Length: 185
Picture 1: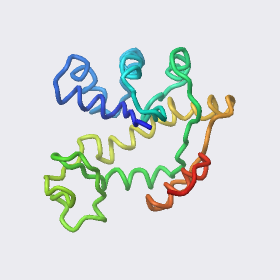
Picture 2: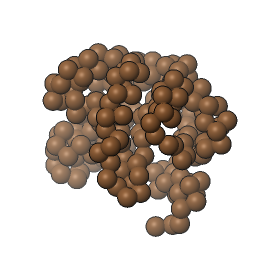
Picture 3: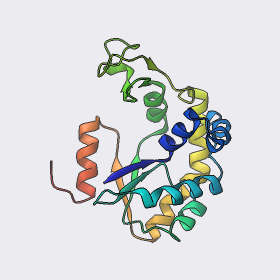
Picture 4: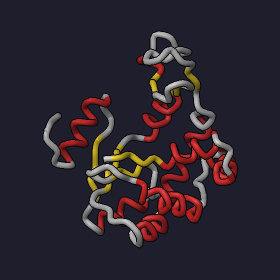
């Protein structure tokens, strides 16, 4: 399967200074959702490029019921994963997130020997501008208001799969595989 992260698509567009990237920059920096028409157009344009035989995983989209309804007009969704985690844990984890400017890998401060150097490639680690507590709290407010209703929307369709995410990555991954009915790897 191919992962399609709308956040990665936007970061690429911002880095390349495309008109879409420049338009999205202001919304992202403030923790706001990028307008539906922009996101939906981007996803609709990107999906035909997917060549993975197992299909794709949409990461960060849809984020509103309107987006989900519009998505259903051009794509079939088999399952929706809801990673359950308390807000205070989300704030802590995102505040501790660091990204390598060279290889793009994401790391957590508690796992690092040197908070400035990527243990994978030796590149410089940075904290994303939107990974500060105030922006994260605002993003959570936006999530509860605009995105959380998606859970009920997809529950009515019988495709929601919930994963308790208050565990280390390997355990959460095992829980994810379990709810999807996938064999251990």
